[in-house]
Amino acid sequence: KDRRKSSRQLTSEWNSSHGKSISARTVRRRLFNAGYKTTGKLLFFSDESHFEVFNRKNKSFVRRLPSESDKPFNFQPRVQGDGGSINIWGIMTGKGVGPLVFYDGRMNGQSYIGVIEPVLLSFIEKNFDPDATRYYVPDNAPCHKSAFSMKWFAKNKINLLDLTAVSPDFNAIENLWDIIDNKLNDYRLNNVNDLQQAILEIWTKISNETFENLVQSMPRHIKKCVCVKGNTSAKY
Image (cartoon, rainbow, N blue to C red):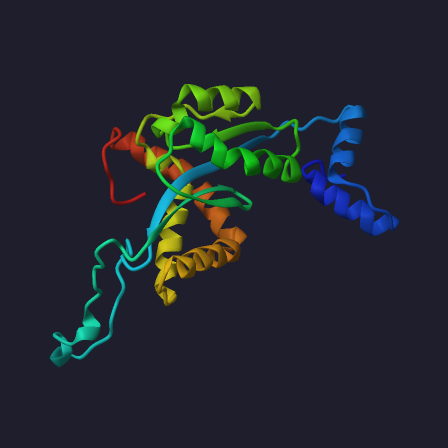
């Protein structure tokens, strides 16, 4: 009756009502054979980010009396060598987060695909109907647009949104990194392992409403960028 239900929702309802167990793949195959095709479009927002153990990107606040301005607790030390850091690649949609991968070093096209290939295709297959048009939103870093990467995306029938270079305002996941960095202020981090575990915990606890709001804000971002003709703006 509800044509907007995903194959996973249909599978769950079938298994509950019939006392049997079938897979979402079976449901998708039978719907396809019966002539039903998915006409929706899927947007996958993806990017890499860098986090440090001690040096937060965002400000933290301290409550103090006027007479305590010189007390040590007012100062956040900058640590030479950042106390350790990690690089992460992640993906999100309007319905929630996808895989999160930690990686080392700088990326080229081959290493970028080496990071996303083991997780991206299985994530799409398990969670989304195969007939939906897929749009993958990177940020046009050189490794994203390399010949090696473009060939891989074409081979796996994943469309790329053709954005201009250095256009973070058009990628909703940029705001997600900022949310994570803010939430890291609530954790006591002493080493890279603490940082990694904190990010994993934050990643899994962000509400679906947050993702919906981030994606729904994109038309407003785009409209503002058009109004300022691609220049910077503090408000969206």
